[in-house]
Image 1 (tube, chains in turn red, cyan):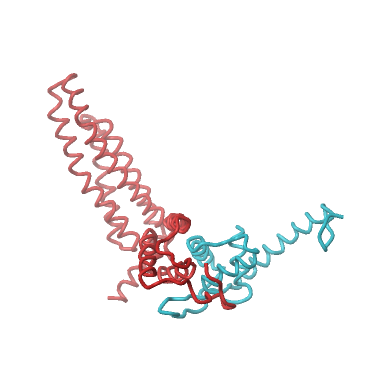
Image 2 (image 1 turned 90 degrees about the horizontal axis):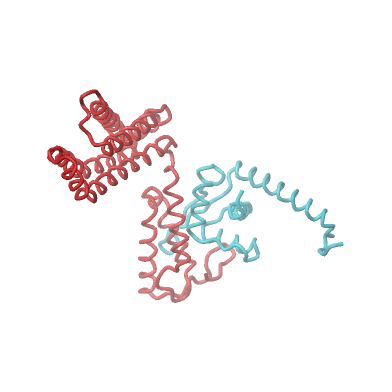
Length: 232
Length: 107
């Protein structure tokens, strides 16, 4: 770090050539991209100025220490709600990410175990295989769509869009109906693991619905909608 | 209150400071023992802003780069004063029990 003046500004700044400075700045910008977008919009230029002011003479790339520090800072920022966002909406959005992850896990597990499941079922009761195969292929095919839906809902709700929470409520309703139909008498056509995954997603959606329709959350959605209208 | 937070607030107690100024000031206050890095500093500044203990005083553009000055809020001043009094009380008790004279050295 070069020495500061009384006002805290660096003496002459680090002695960096234009190419060194550009290379270092690119490196820092790549690391700052780890932070949430709201934080970067608010602070990126300012942090970059401080990082460059703290650079050593001739430094061309960020140090490991600075990289680790920025990584920790980014992780902490992802754990914080954006300014003005209530804790309820913040937690609901993390739940939606968890929903996407759960669906991803279901898709991967189904793909990976498809061969083993086929061999087991053909060995135990071959006539059941076509039905099970149809269901498993359906699971794999719908996984990307469900993941995309969870991520879109997380995005829309984080921006306070009412259609985001309406979609979430609808998603929960449909999911609950599917789980109820699967568990009802005579309707037990789902695999136990499939049922469990559906139930987990249903519970995640239920918790998220409660959170986004909380009065504190509703104020956030109203404010966000007003801001969007005034910008239009 | 964490030591880094205490030192950042202390750095702002004398007047507004920008990010690099805080880093340099914290190093000076701590006798070079605490060396803040930018990631740690801005995580702390964000938390302190969210808790309304500091606020942005003004912004400048220096060498085409944004420089933002921060200052303590009245709540921040109260919180720092309370924390300083608490630490002082603990330090006084420790020194009294050790029978350390004010000039240093154990009596």
